[in-house]
Image (tube, rainbow, N blue to C red; front, side, top):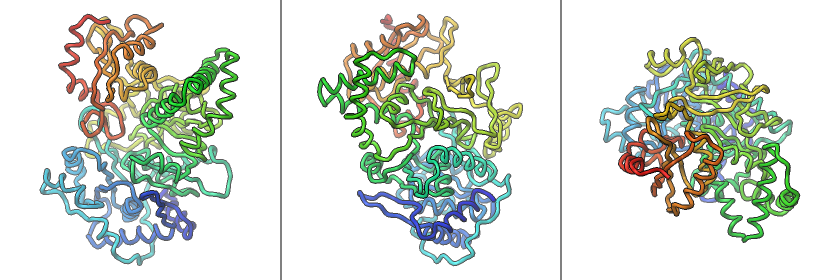
Length: 550
């Protein structure tokens, strides 16, 4: 059976129980398996009425919702290729993606979302709004069309840290294989129990990892709760009370900073106990000996402080799952100290979101887990991670030359640098294209230093290391509330300590403007658009380099 046939069977078996929920204004709205299947059939009947044929592309343009899920399942059930788009992306980028995938139909939640795109592209294909799609009846057999392994089921556009986003095609075999892998790992995490997994979701379904989590949740005994207001995530988490949910590092960094700030506000004694407890935890990971007062502080924090902190994040959390970008080891250890495991996942859109996953029984902080069974990974002579297996995409939409380059030699070239230890756990060390080459000839991966500086300077929203073809390294630090220069310099000094001269940061520039997707300095999934940042602050950077470094 294909992944879609399995999902339909599971929804039928869960006909009378809740499978998906939305949170609206502090209230939960839920739908049963039977209710979701009825909505899927409404959408299928509408699609058939539009004369769409198997293999046609349909753009899906809406925020996460039960109706989004029903629309996505309906598109695939009719043999159509769903193309999910990010509602927060710039209209010009969206118009380019729609033009690239040439959809026969755009399925949209409301007119306000699509109006700006239509202004840029008056010849856009017809738009079907959800209110119309879900008006009809739900009469039909309900079985999805069968997919062959090579049949395309979706096109997900890469976030495009530089250059034009490309449409990554997933076929049925990719998704069927990956759902088997994710279910196996979640079985290890949750064990055997009769009650359903409680899953929370805030990342848009247009991201490969978020979409895979959605399909995984629909294929197993679980209830998925959707966030509808990112400004109220903390309240929604408490209401959803999830067992696990998927995160990006930026979210975990912000939660960590908020917790640390809250502890500081409790007073000097609480701050001292917390700091000693953290040092005890971190030194244990590094193989150092705990000091007696630190061990006592950790014991006190475990009994008095940490339970209330865990309750504030999620009272029933079994784990936080993190991917999309490298997570600072200090942040992973921070949550582990609180008693919340952080399970890392590594992958790209082209690998059906996943290559490695932490085994919940054997987590190595700072690593992203072993390769998923059935997936091969190796490091090339240039230090690049290469991957092959059933998870590798068949190609980019209408880009044969770029597909051939990415799959040269039968391996997918990730563009990431990494290493694997004796136990098979992988560690991601940087991106090849981000490599900084100083005038001295030294090659430096910026990501580890950026993570270290961000950890030493929790007030910073983002840190960008620069220095390509320059004499020394410098940092661009985004701090919206401003910060005294000596505080920034002290954090840099801490990072520089013990580093070789060519890896030391000699200058910095503070930017009192956040890096966001809206100002085109972050990708849709929170990664730095390095070239765009360098261009935006080029004059400031030039002035910084003309000064004598500290």
